[in-house]
Amino acid sequence: MTAKKKILVIDDDMDFLMATKLILESGGYEVFLAEDGKSGVDMVKSVAPDLTITDMMMETWGEGFAVVSKIRSMEQGKDMPLIVLSAVDLQGPYQSYEPSDEFPKVNMVLHKPVKADDLLKYAKQLLR
Amino acid sequence: MTMTENNSGLILIIDDEESIRDGCTQALEKSGYTVLATGDGHEGVRIAREKHPDIAYVDLKMPGIPGMDIIDILSREIPDIVLIVITGYASIISAVESMKKGAYDYLPKPFTPDQLRAVTTRGIDHRNLTLETRRLKEEKEQVEKNFITFVSHEMRSPLVTIEQYIESLKVIAGDCLGEDAMHIIERCEKRIQNLEALVEHWLDISKIENGTLTQKKEPVNLAAIVARSMEEMIPLCQRRGLEMEKDIPGDLPAVIGDEESLVRVLINIIGNATKYTPSGGRIHIGAEYDDLDVRISISDTGTGIPKDKIPFIFEPFFRGKGKEDRQRGSGLGLTFCKKIMEAHDGSIEVQSKEGEGTTFLLKLPR
Image 1 (tube, rainbow over the protein chains, first blue to last red):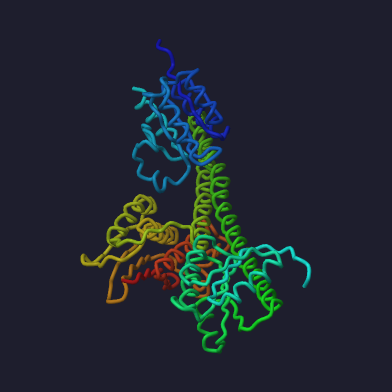
Image 2: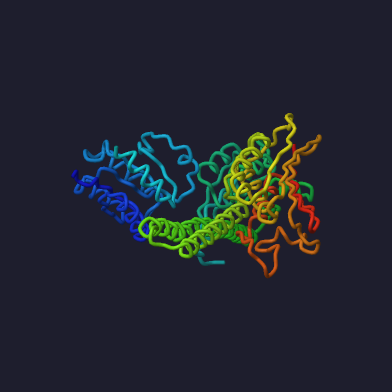
């Protein structure tokens, strides 16, 4: 049996983290949780997840983007699949997401709340 | 006044008479003000642009640039500067004209140091009041804006989290849950979605009211907007056993507006129609135009609105039904639609007959 794939979820809402963890665990993944951007970035290094899912609007607006930039600049995070999961109306620069220096490359942008089936489907797709 | 008073403020004197400049400078410095003085109009404008004085005294009659022009330039260019006219040729006409150009006060020559100081104090008070008023206004706007952002985050995140929990509950317990339990979960989801819609609408209405809703103003194709809205609502109509049809002229002219908002207006109204139209009914979307307006009509064969309730349906939280209220919505849907239509310089009207149906008419200027 192959080892379980590891998924890191970063969000400042512990309840949201728990709900997401339950869904992902039902898909057979090992799930790690980080309640803020900094511990999230640290865990990318210590846990080396196969996929990271991060919120956009945490302590400050745009912290999610800072987290994404940081992860992308790290050896462990440079090619790791990344999903942005946000409740914010993706308006302005976020509406039509185009990766750039300012908005680094993520693999997918999903809107909260996310259907369990969708989350599992996309995770599977990105972890192929 | 013998003592030096503890005033502060930067005063600029623009007057070609040296004695006036010296007299004013002495009197005002004695009161604690900082004074700059020049006999040249152009130089005066330059100093004002660079130093942004609190008050500028401007002589109307000077060689070179007329004092009236200086008043005009400074009042337009330098925000909140208090301009006071000094002149030896005082007349009602020149006083009125300079006030029109933005002067705050008028001091006829000759004047005493006490008169000068009194006018200066009044000018500084006026300026402080203006600045304070603006600061309070800006603060209020900022608080309102932050409040909206705060509410947006603080009210939506718990709802989103509850929805996510329900999703996870279905995943981990789905197989063990009976039909009744699943029904309860579905009702919870429905009620949360309604509350979310309420928050959404309330936010949008607040944003329209304080002018922070970003609305595009570009030519939009109403036929495409109708098509998009219908596409979104067809599944719901099918579930409720309703037929939806449209009759839109191919040459419907474009109007100026925000496509997303207009789609939401239509979705709201079609959504209402589905709620109040019994299964087997019909929703018809039509359009017509003349030289002034483009009009979209949304008609249903539903229960209609009682005549005495029609005047209130656009009011926040007004509900069409009484006790049997099973048709819940955000309570702000039509208020939102009305605000959006008004933001487009358009209007929304309703015609309804109980037992026959309701027609909403959206009017947009060409």
